[in-house]
Length: 207
Image (cartoon, rainbow, N blue to C red):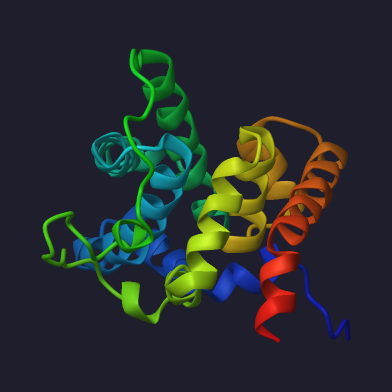
């Protein structure tokens, strides 16, 4: 027996896959847990890719609406996560093409957290506090990581987010971004190197 199943096979038992199967079978009780499982993930991805909170909120909402409008087009529930992020990616691209103005300010790390609404209040996004990547994106290291991520070329940033934050496979990432698997590996390698270089001085200083 292979002790290291591939990412796609391992995800076959993931909760979102089971909920996708239920939804395709007409079980409406899976709607709420399915949405809650993706809200924070989609918002974090769209914020880091879009650059402004208003755009990210709009894109995340449009993504979820599109997901449910076209849910019957999902052919393989095991691929639901990649399918959802492909939709999010496409809406991010459309939003960026429509944008006339560049971002007016840098986003703070606190604002990056999915539970923050910009006025010191919290939004009710399920499980955000439990996500290791959300916890990582706090504090001084998180601020530096955020800046380093934003400094990456978009082509590298999108790959790093999908592979290292959302833990999608190389094949899934290639499908979402419509590039080859070799390109995914190349961009991921370069993106990681750039992040390590950016964070190296800080990590050495705190050790």
